[in-house]
Length: 226
Ligand code: FPP
Image 1 (cartoon, helix red, strand yellow):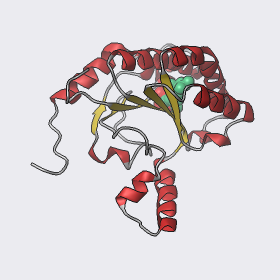
Image 2 (image 1 turned 90 degrees about the horizontal axis):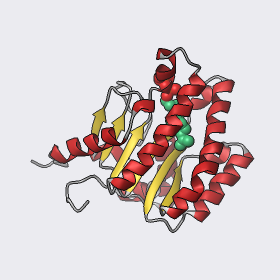
Image 3 (image 1 turned 90 degrees about the vertical axis):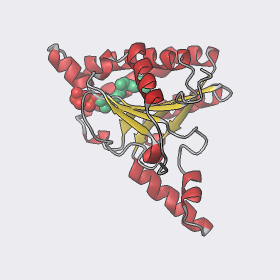
Image 4 (image 1 turned 30 degrees about the vertical axis):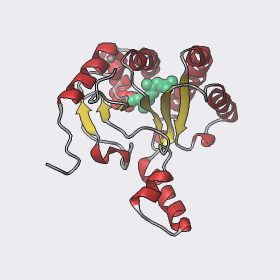
């Protein structure tokens, strides 16, 4: 896309897997599985739309509070997702980035993730996945490092965030009708447009992402000016 106003970086809070399953009388695990299919679709859609970076909130630092069985389902999904998509990501030149403290995951997942990071590092577009991520923790950590450097200003803090090498966040989308940020990209959202959509994540597809980007284009961003 050569349109100057088109978003470069879109982030999504993927919400509603559980409700999608409940509506159909299915176990939550199936909702997450369909959520995984939506991830595949949307990564392709982001490429078709020419986005430079897509950031997905896959596992928050608060998600550890869920039932053990659900956490284990999500971890299984993560393993299968990497196994099933790594080759495709390399071929499509998608660079994987992880934001969050992923090293708290099981050793085999950490190993798979690090292998995927290494194998995709020359990709041209970025898929950033938030894993064991919490924005307040990220900001506190960055502020600590900035303090060690002796300059607690916004430029130095930004440089120590996980997202330092990503384009500025243009558009933040949350699915499922909930209207809150849930500790996601709090610093990076300072000037981002926000879109809260009623669609449940497993139903989200290319058309939804395209429409969201079109709505973004029609919004006038002011950055505090007039
Ligand atoms: C929110 O739905 C979704 C999650 C907590 C997990 C998101 C994970 C995926 C979409 C699949 C795995 C992702 C990758 C990158 C492989 P919810 O369970 O909170 O839904 P509810 O609010 O309706 O209960």
